[in-house]
Length: 169
Image: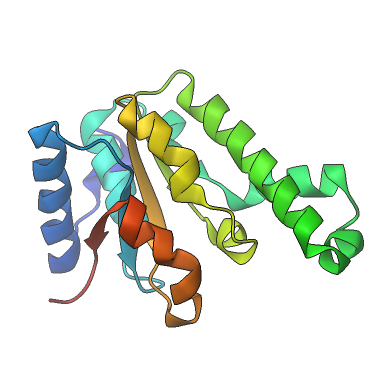
């Protein structure tokens, strides 16, 4: 088994893992699933553990979004220019996110998208970009921070995603 699958999950992660497994076993999920929690709550560990339980090689099913998006934004424009023109930065980030999502989902039936902070910062509607793929039968899991300062920026997670919260309860 892959190293990701050998991780010991804490109680909150075990509860969320069971909820994720039950939800997916029902076959009724046609929307992205968002693992939410504080920074350091174990969203990434849980997602990687879940992938390792279902795929012999889980890495192709895991995507940290920030780095490739930032690289694409730097290719498209100078970062100082993007800082001065947030609408341009948002458009570039949205196009780059769409391209990354399309590429990663082309050959995968399931994928985890993590490190989405850049998309939240530029208000890119990630759930809206992912929902058509989920409706087409792809299993999409997003690790999203549950940060009060971003609450208004994450509203679509509640309306367009199935939320599984990692909390101590």
